Amino acid sequence: MSTAARIFRTYVEENLDALSADPAREALVHQGRRVTAGEFRSLVHRLARALRARGVDRGATVTLLSGNLPETVAARYAAHLVGARVNHLYSKLSAESQAEIVRDVETRALIVDPRHAERAAEIIESAPVRDVLVLGPTKLGADLLKLAAGQSDEPFASRARAEDVCTIRHTGGTTGHPKGICTTFGQTRWFHGVLQQELAYERRQLVCTTLAHAAGAMADSTLHRGGTVVLLDDFDPGTVLATLARERITEMFLLPPLLYQLMDHPDAPHTDTSSLRMLTYGGCQASPARIADAIRMFGPVLMQGYGQNEAGGISVLTQEDHDPLRPGRLRSAGKVLSEVEVAIRDETGRDLPAGEHGEVCVRSSMIMKGYWKQPDLTAEVLQDGWLHTGDVGYLDDEGYLTIVDRLKDMIVVVGGHVYTTELEDLLNSHPQVLQSAVFGVRDADRTERVHAAVVRAPGSDVDAQQLRTMVRAERGTMYEPDQVAFIEALPLTDVGKPDKKELRRQAERHGCPAG
Image 1: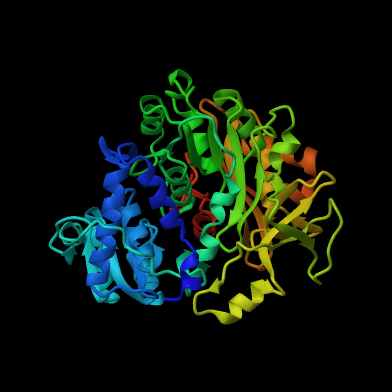
Image 2: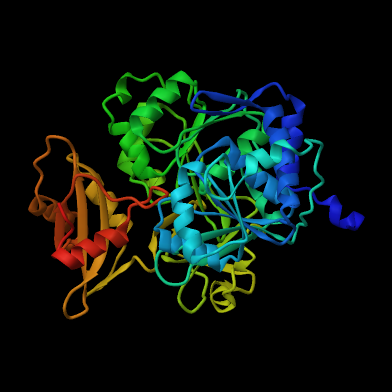
């Protein structure tokens, strides 16, 4: 490999250097098991050699079917050291969807959490792979940890190059052909640039959402900065609150519906969360009313990040911007990052002035390389260096970006457009409403009707007519829902977003969501 090619250093190499600085420090915690920086670094190098011994090399695809284990992070680092691209499956997808993705990305090696061994067996039955490597002893495949134990832990020289595909992340893989978003090793380093501020405290990050999503990149940032990552297998509000207090957590990431569950848990008012310094939320729209409640509960520690797998980071609403007395500001996604350009454009491609709604288009060095094996779709969203995000939004006079909807979620009604998040914000502002999700359902004439699924506050007796009356008074008849259904909890996707596809299916099947 040429000297020029090796000048580039991957995020893994930078993180391994950081781990080497203090090998005795606590790096990862899982179910009482505490892994030091030195132990983790040693495991990464051993795993990299074990993968090479199995024939996994630069340009191969390694697919992870694994929960939130220290070994999951180590396996990803090892695969990236050998120059392989990594696809991390969402564990709650159906076996059929997972198998489709395994085939689609041309998986060379499937690395499996022992707890998912039965699911892995289902996957490889319809999508055979050359190597099944398990993070522990099972009847399936080879024990990767045992193979690694026989290898040297001397530093393994990275084989990756900046232009190589580092990760393939899937969106919309539950129906139709999976849409794999390709990011290069060069682009993967963007996240360190977003959180460059030097923090005057020892970072202890709680991961309670899947490492396959945003929490994985945040864990990388924490390890890079000499902090500790505390891993929970899944999100449970009571467990999260107890862990916050016990482990003196300083930062965490939650999708808004999970943040609301945390706030509504009976233990929340009595839990010591004083160690929290940064509670980042994002991934879907948030309710300004509920975020104001969160500020009052947790203090001035909230930060919102807006971005896409296709685009990387786009904007940040800082802790200073989180003022509960300014709900309009809380509705925004913050200011555009300094290294990102954003234009708001109409359907003809014309740039729109401040305040006008249009598609959010982004240009930066973080933009994906393209969709895996889908050149036509790539050309559709990547035009002249600009990524067309599919989000509808506007910029105000101060440069704050507000997202009002996804183009595909915007409901076209007689008289105009209903932006679902604006109606959700209004419904959530009612004192007896905890959460809501708004979506369009076509009737027998193929006309879209506005439906709302609402989660009432405990003891609430607000009815559909009262909510319709409020909406009509505030926004007019165009925004008034045709159907309001009261449900116990919103169904969520694997990463914690409201599952509007499921709500729509229920509405189409029963005439309204089950409740």
